[in-house]
Image 1: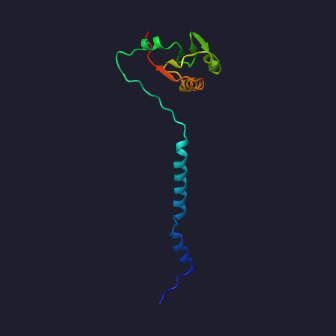
Image 2: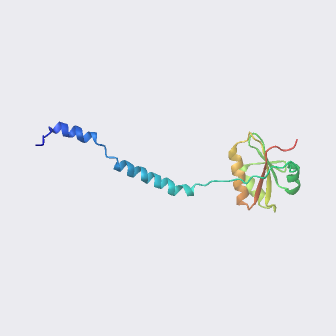
Length: 136
């Protein structure tokens, strides 16, 4: 013979059962959303040059006439003339070089590099050589 539990005991037993199915469904949906969105994140990669002692900064200077200098404060100079970042695009349009050398101070803000790189890509430059330790 089955014993009947009072109503308060039935409620207590029901509260002890936790239904995990809705929680698992939500976790799977969030996981699927992250997996499907991840290919759309914009990432950037830089192809590194092989290290060799015979390649120096002076060999880069001979081959590339466009030289962009950025100091520790983030001030940009082209051909010894200080350039504001919004005007960089207009200065690069008439040039015919497809390769640029960027002499970048290690203390300069990263955002300046990113903006210069974006302008060079927009203007059709094919390669950006980053020189971190220019000769004295």
